[in-house]
Amino acid sequence: MSRMELEKAFGTLKAQDEKAFIAYIMAGDGGLQNLKGQIQSLEAAGVSIVELGIPFSDPVADGPAIQAAGQRALAQGVTLEKVLAELARIRQEVSIPVVIMTYANPVLRLGADRFATLAHEAGVSGVIIPDVPLEEEKEFGAPLAKYDIAMIRFITLTSSEARIKEVIEGAEGFIYAVTVNGTTGVRDGFEDSLYDHLEKISRASDVPVCAGFGINDAQQAEKIGAHCDGVIVGSRIVNLLNAGRAEEIKSLIPGNRDVAANASK
Ligand SMILES: O=P(O)(O)OC[C@@H](O)[C@@H](O)c1c[nH]c2ccccc12
Image (cartoon, rainbow, N blue to C red; front, side):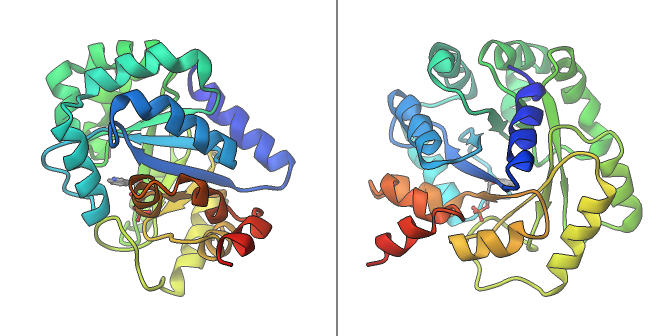
């Protein structure tokens, strides 16, 4: 698999006039032996793409829910290499695209070339590394490009016009538009200016734009998704999985309204 799978997924959604729902989970939270079942249950719930987090000891952009999930996974001895090996083992049984979300350090420890090879063997479609700025992207992106794996870039609320233009030029897979300032996790609400910001980026970008951080339910997902190509939900899903309430993930996806109504009864 490669970034073609991402293009295909977004193409199918567009043809059906639907938005992408990207679910973030922490690999190895609950044990790596459960990864296959977790991804399959997301797929069955109607998730479009899985963003698979790699546990890391110094996760600067993660809020409390993701940090706690990372600690649980680290306590189980989960590493980037083990996650990629497990993904390679289960790839035939998983059909939605998987994007790896990791910090730079675990990739550098493995070596950027070896990481790209293992990610390719694991069927990974894209990679998100939040602590690698555009200026340093090449070191990571070039080996991935050999296998056509997308290097996914961020735009934040404070990105300047010039920066937005730079990010959009040569963007791959999709653009991750951060909806709030700060770390991941549930928020009370969003700035009114968010919607214009998302529309502006979407208009300018050739690749789909997906918004994430602080999206907590189907209503928010629908409202934000209306101004871009999809949403990313992390903390809420991580918490539901950890609480053994995976079946409620369905109710976070807009369009599963009946499910949502039933779940809250
Ligand atoms: O948890 P939230 O608020 O739903 O946001 C998604 C986010 O967790 C996920 O995409 C993510 C986890 N760790 C990150 C680090 C940087 C950027 C994004 C992430």
